[in-house]
Amino acid sequence: MRLFNELAVPGLGGVWFGKQLFLATLGVLVAEQANERGCQVTKIAVANAIEAIACWLALTGEPRTSGGRVLGSTKIIGHDSYSFSKVSQSNFYVTTPMRMTTVTALPALGLVETSGNRFNSFSCSRQGLELVEAVCQDSRPFNKSVVEHLVQWVCGQDDRVDSGRLRAALSPLTPLPPHARLLIQARLHQGTSREAESSRRRRSDALRWVESRRQAAPPVGWDSRPVQISNPEHWADLHAGALFFRVRNAALDVLDELEIYIGTPERKYAFGASIPARVQDALTSLNSVAQAFLDLNHHSVEARKFCSECVSDSAVEVLSKLVGRDGRILRLVGTNICPGPAFHGGEQPEEVQPESNDAPGAASHGWPDGISHRISNLWWLSLDLDGEIEAWLNSENKEATHG
View (tube, rainbow, N blue to C red):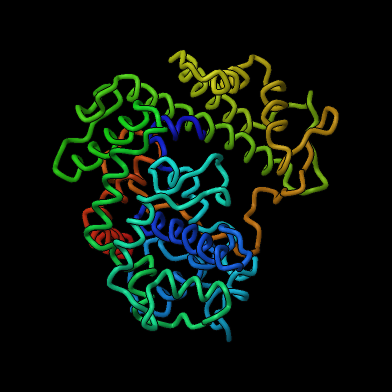
C-alpha cells in the first residue's frame, strides 16, 4: 500500500493542506531553540503540543467549516491550564496527530534536514525557516515573535496561549499568507537534491494534473493518460495501484464476512467445514480482482506475492493466508479460525473511534476508479495553495447537508 501511494505522488505522505506542513516544521524549530536554552524536550512532544494548541485556538475562535482540519474537539476544550507541561501529556490530545502525516513530506520537500526517517532526528532547514517566517511575520503575540513566545511556553516561562495573534498564525482554519503558499508550491515542484529526479517529476506532474482538473480539463479513464503525466510508467503505476487497492478491499471483505459468520468470541470456523455462502462470494470477488492485478505483471514482488496467494484454487489456503496476515481480529489456532484480541463479531466497538486525518472525499472530481488517495490529497492541497480551499469545503458541506 505504501509503495503504490509513494509511486503515485512521491513525498506527499498524508498531507492535504498547507498548515500541516507549517505546524510540523514550526514544532521542529521551536524544539531546537528550546533545547539550545537547556530545556530538554523532544521534537515530537513539542510539535504535538503546538498542534494541540493550534486546534484549541481554532475551536475557540470564529466558527468555520473545518472539513477535518481540526482534531481533538472532544479532548482539548475546557481545561483549566494550557501550559506546555499539561498540553504535552500523552492523554491531552489525539493519539494520531496531523504531525504523523508529515514525516515523509518534510524531508522530501526540503523543509527539514535529517539523516534518518524519525521525526526526532529532524532539524529545520533554511527552506523550513523561510516557511515559518512567511506564516508568522505579521503575528506578534504578547509583543514577541511567534517562535520566541512558543519557545518560552515550552520552557515554562510563559503559559499564555489565548491570543488572537497566535490564532492567526497557528489555527489550521486561517489561510496561509500568499508568500507561504508560493513557498510550499515551489517545494512540491523542486523537492530536494537528495530526492530522485523521477520522484520530483512524478509529484510535479501530479500537481499539474490536479490543477488542470480545476481548469476544466476533461476527466480521463485508465485507458487515456492525461498529458500532464509525462511518464507512461507513472500512469501504469497509478493504474496498478488502483487495482491493488481493490484487492486489499476485497481481502478485507472476506475477513469481514468471516468475522460476521463467527459472530461471537465463543464460535470458530474449522477448515474442512463447508464455506459459508457469503464468504464464498467474497472469495470469488477477491480471486477476480487479484487475477486482474497479476495480469498487469507489475514489478512489485510483494504485491504479486499477495495476489498470488489470493488466486489459489484452495479456498482453505486463501483463508489461511489472509487470517495469518491479520492475527488481530481473526487468528489461526491449529486448523481453526478463531476470534483474535480485536474481535467484534462484525459490529463496531462502542467506544469513540479515533479522529481521522483524512482529507474530504473527492469522488465527484472525476478521478479514474480506485486511484490513490494521494491524488485526492494533492487536489485539496492545490486548492489550499491557490487560496480556494475554504470555498470548496463550504460548497461540499452544503451539498452533503442538502443531499
